[in-house]
Length: 173
Image (tube, rainbow, N blue to C red):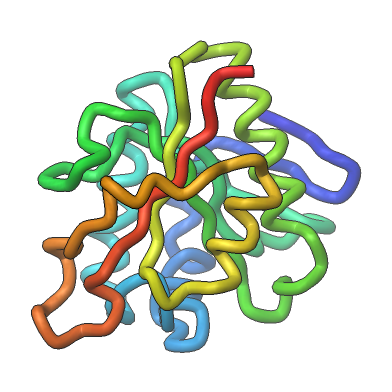
């Protein structure tokens, strides 16, 4: 568990399904992240997230004032992408929690934990090229874009504007 000034980050459990299903089912939250998920897909997605922890790390549940407001943390890089085998940073917050510095607060703590605990040479993050808010946060976190690792994400259909994906990275301090 990690605590920041406003947040508590803890390992997810199966009991988090309802809160996460609301986020994964919210078209506003998912607009730049991926397809909106129904309950069955949310069950599968949570199982995948729980499985990341077999590597000793994954995305934490982000809580504020006792309420689950999202996910943030580090996970193994997405398979079948240029970041496979890397440590990937990522986050997702409820829309009513945006523009308050919370994703940055959570990710600053997650990166500090990652450097201390995992000590990789770098940590990467990916997002849809159109996701300006996440790209700005990546820059604020000290990440730089790696133009050579821009790619078409296999998770998205050919015509989906989220398919074009940019990669950012930060080296071990």
